[in-house]
Length: 207
Image (cartoon, rainbow, N blue to C red; front, side, top):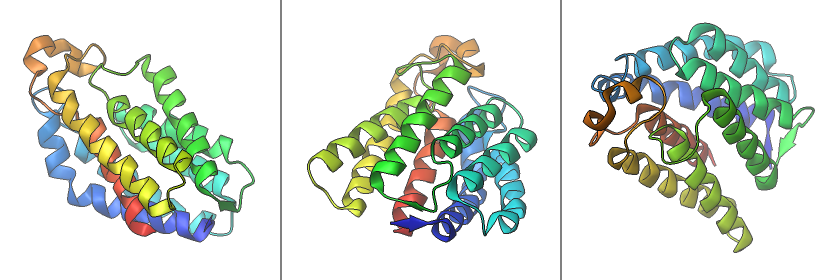
């Protein structure tokens, strides 16, 4: 079981990780986007870090909704609304919860995937963050069904997420700024799929 304190710890770890990888994520964005994915996301998680002390005594749903709102209001480009929606919808799905088990986490992740699909009007195989999110959730569900422990479940999710991010190099983007470069985007890894993989890694490492 994971409580609100642990969730805040994970969110802080994500902020540190995004700051560390800010330049790499921005580099990935240069050939196919606005060259600002890492910079924008780091700014967003800096704002999240400032908000976290105000929700230390709140339920997990409220914590995640607060994260989503901070991201929407501070992150430019597509990633702000997409990640913002994902965290907000996840927060709604977990409203009132003071503890999470793996099934709660996966229910939240399902909702996050739906939020990104709706907001981005995207599906799998379009070279977006969904190409990391969808396989990660599927792999975690499979591991749960096989009776794996939490750490092994998250391990399976991370492996699938990174494989999905890698796979975006083979896809022609049809959504977002990356779609403007068409075939020239081949060979380039999607920054959103990469940043999501880092986030999931932070969840795994915190257990």
